Length: 252
Length: 252
Image (cartoon, rainbow over all chains, first blue to last red; front, top):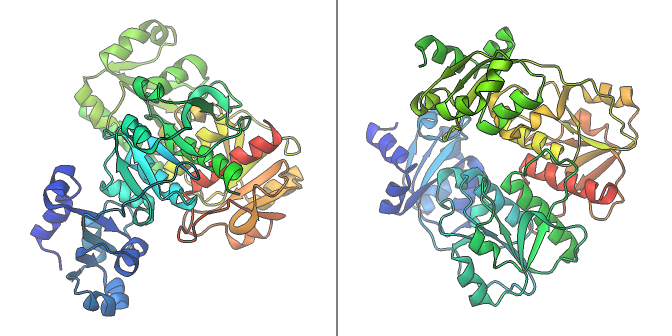
């Protein structure tokens, strides 16, 4: 049974200011909450879940001494950000992504320049996971990692892919990155270029890559189109096609 | 100035039943509404737009005798499905996609098997446009084309890409399609196969390709992953990576 205060508390975590104050965020869905319980070092403050979920996980929940509240489907709907919520919502503590020294000579990663849409951000984290990219980078202006829509769209990949907020300049200097690709509309076709490991800059959904960051690119690349009318691809879609081509050329 | 009845009328079109009854749908944003006005045969019943939009398009709106109502930013927010609405919302009439005989010997297209998420559907229409695919196909159970979230996610591509609801069986028989690919998790790598023009089946977000439709596939293909933990890619992301590889092998 959910109290009004609990509903308020959970809903308050949909707002960035409140998350930062309490250093907690929301994760939901059977698969994601299960993974957090069983395979991650993330501390869960409270699980709100339906009978089925609690029943299946009682042992583990008790072992880990996680606070939990059994709720009805109706109550779940009140606290979920999804249209069809799936059994569980967990309040989790902020966590530290493992410290990573990324080897840009033997791997490729992305720099997201002011990506604003949480769905895009989460989807990019999910596809990075697919292609074995363990860290991605983004401008400090980009969408926040702990946004519940980001967490949701990663489908659990936020547990495996680190996201580092850093200025592009600093990232390139610190890591001495040789190959910095800018994904633009009028670059060289990714299918005609022998691609190298390094960093790929993906621009903002509406405005592309910022002027200053664009100047840091050592090479401009594009996804060839068959149609002049389409102005651009969705940022996550562009990212996925480029990641797949780098993967094909360098790792498959 | 918006009346309460107008707000009700517009909001009612977010529901499928009402759209089908009135054979009208909503399209919004400067770019999309502009394209409908200037480059499409679609009939607009009414434009609700801010002063800027009306001012810039007065001539055309009068020429075409489109009814319009000038509204404030606040009123726009009430009728838009977006968080940051962009100047205009138009009520449009249902339209007929140009009749198409698709040449599966020299082109490839997608069959979407029960795709339910409107964002995925719209994004797939947008990327089909990018790769010059003028018609895509889907199961009758898939998400509805006129859903405002589909229209929104296409970013105007719904004007150029037709979507045909048809049973897979019927589609294959009618067009005598030789190469029918099923996108699955345990097929042959798209990077190791010489791909042929034909049809690619993309499965439902949660359940993949249905049993019966899977049997129609002449070949099963996969996007190779570098990480066993990621269960799958988002349907639109999978679609984009596969489309890009078909495009690379066959058209670039």
